[in-house]
Image (cartoon, rainbow, N blue to C red; front, side, top):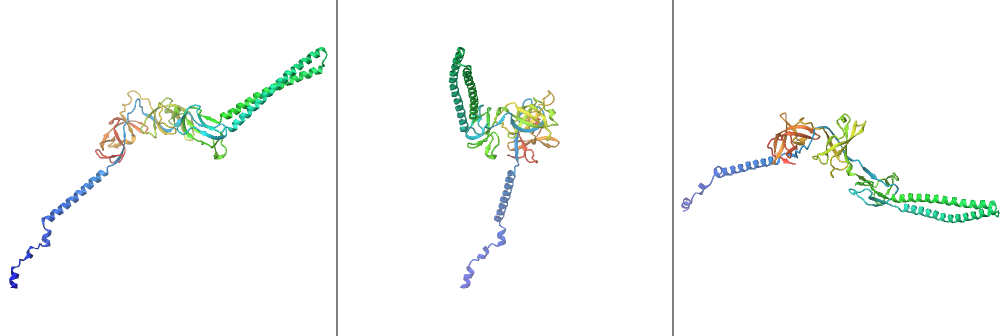
Length: 408
């Protein structure tokens, strides 16, 4: 019975899959191929993003119009913006500041009150001088009354002396009294004039307590505060101010540069100049030589040259750094007319040619250019560029045509 049961039971061992056979199935191959493809895709995408992320960073600047009548630069120099009229306003007396009516950047007119000083002492001196003058004037009135009486007495004595009644001695005494009173009145009048002079001095001291602007300009420095002592001379160490404010006449702004004495012969009054402020490197300011100071600095071997701006601008401020190019007058037909100006740093050498890289739509374009004269930090472009083109002025040395870049 048991043997029959064993013979009728199905054999399930034939359905078992061998481990070796399992690894050779088609499904496993598909999974491996898919995994490899995903890995390759990830690597390719990562490399692409890495390449895009490594776009070189460049700095660009616009090519500028060359301007009218621009000439070649004969000489370059640097200096500072300076005003011809600048004054540190100080008090004429030593006193305490009680009021300051200005601040830095304020425009003032000629005669405008800048500050007031303590005038109490000066007022007392003025009152004392006026009182002394009034007392002397009152004494004159009394002396004039006495003089009138003495003159009447003198006349009586003269009449009596003619009649032989009065003595000569009495007449002389009357005449002496009248002359003495006249001399006293004259002296008193001189004392009144002296008292008037003292009043004028005391009034001037009072007026000196009001500090006014000597000319129209802009306050560039406020040097004293309320409560501080000011003096026309340095006194008391660091506790006494010698100035109240500094004023600059902005209409007298000009440039002062030092020119090497070896090249000063190239500079003449009235010569055209192009000035560039360090604060605005792309702003070309037309100017001209005002004067050449007729002396040299033996230590620096330089000569000072003062240059006037053709047109003043609020952006031009005292003590700004400036670079100037002294220009030569153009001669008709002497050279080609420049089409644009670019910074000299934009020029590159390639195969013996001068090239620049333009930036358009995030890519650089290699462009050969024809270069003219140099103007300070700029060069003239005779061909290959137009005003307004964006050129690379700073970037990697290995830039190539069509390369994607990031603009700084």
